[in-house]
Image (tube, rainbow, N blue to C red; front, side, top):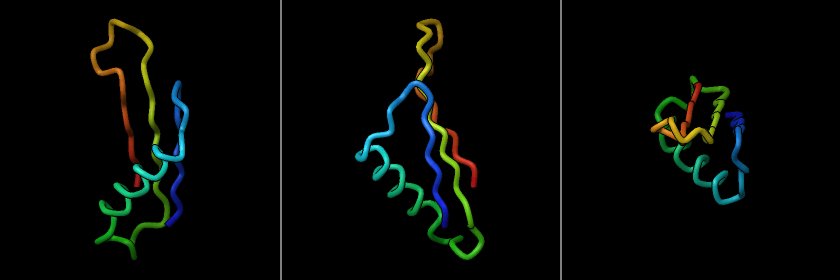
Length: 60
């Protein structure tokens, strides 16, 4: 399984990369034979008018 993690307005640290990897592996454990690639997009909005400032989008 290929895991691609991208960040917008956020630095992908080693700890963040390990956390995402752990959660994704747990989520796709049952479908490993069907899953070839997982894209994770993490973003932080710097606009104070936006309520949800942190977003995670996962495409399997």
